[in-house]
Structures are given as structure tokens and as C-alpha cells.
Image 1 (cartoon, one colour):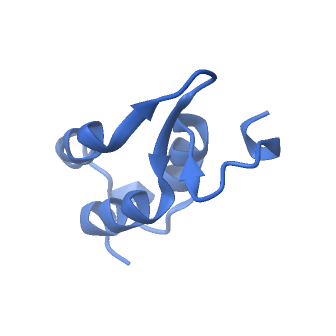
Image 2 (cartoon, helix red, strand yellow):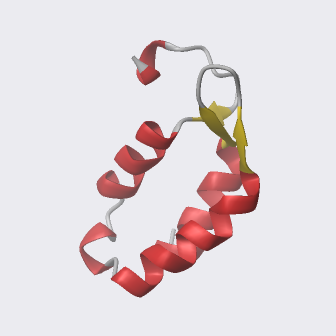
Image 3 (cartoon, rainbow, N blue to C red):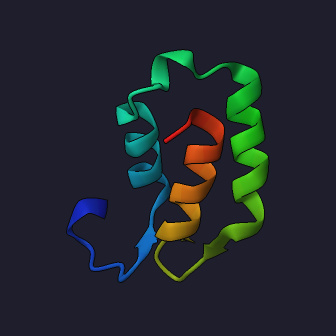
Length: 69
């Protein structure tokens, strides 16, 4: 369902997790790095009427900081 929504530059938690799992460095993701990523994303997540959303560009920046480009 999340893949069918027109989110206009935003990403849902399900989409974010799928991108994290699909990242080439996912096998190197430690619990500590995941916690750091979670803490970095937290202030950027906005609750909308239908879902939690995060700016996709900010997500990509934070993901690359956590796992590399």
C-alpha cells in the first residue's frame, strides 16, 4: 500500500525499512548503527492523518551517514 501512495518527496516507515534492507551495506548494519540512525531520524518524522512520514532527501542523507553511500 505504501508503494502506491503519492507521497511527493516523503517516505513512510515501511518504505524506509525496505531501503535500509536493500542498501548494499545492510549486512554491516550493527545494532549500534541502527540505534544511531533511529535517533537521527526521530526529529524528522511527522505524523500525518494516514501515516508517519519523513522527508525522503533527509532520509537518504541520514542513511548514507549510517551505512555509507
